[in-house]
Image (cartoon, rainbow, N blue to C red; front, side):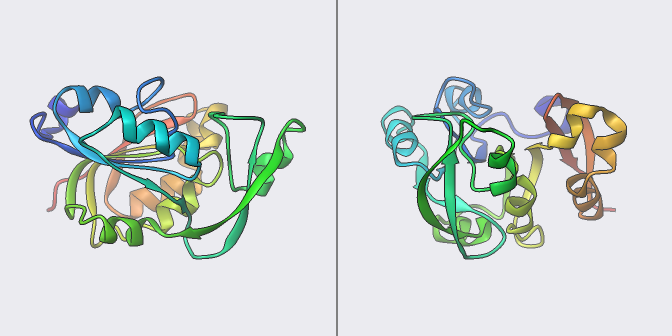
Length: 195
């Protein structure tokens, strides 16, 4: 994918929001192994602790990301779950989820500013269990220009028609991104060249 869109494969930079495990199931670990580095963000302390041990070149931030600052609850089915969320409607669909703690959210732009993120970078991964659109809206796509975005779109499970009707697809299309691929929940968008 990166060779096709012309993204540098040497010394690339990524941002991974909802990073979960630093290796297992990670959309950025392959890049890390290839010499890239970046920013890993997760709202749960245990995941952040493991990421700091395993990904020494990365900046690892414990934060709950949304489109504004507010206090929300973290819901999860258990310890070190891949499905922890701050979206109460996502948690409501799962009777095994329970409230872990309260957390104050911040925007992705605020975190990237604080971490001295480059304004143009190769890859943004967003996997935030139902809160993905709010994470995306909290990123200034005027200031920060990821070349490729992989984002979880729950509507995409129903098929391409539902994916292209989603708020996320509409938003990214309006901001100069085109859909290149998708698999179940994850969609990959590439920034169109400036005309």
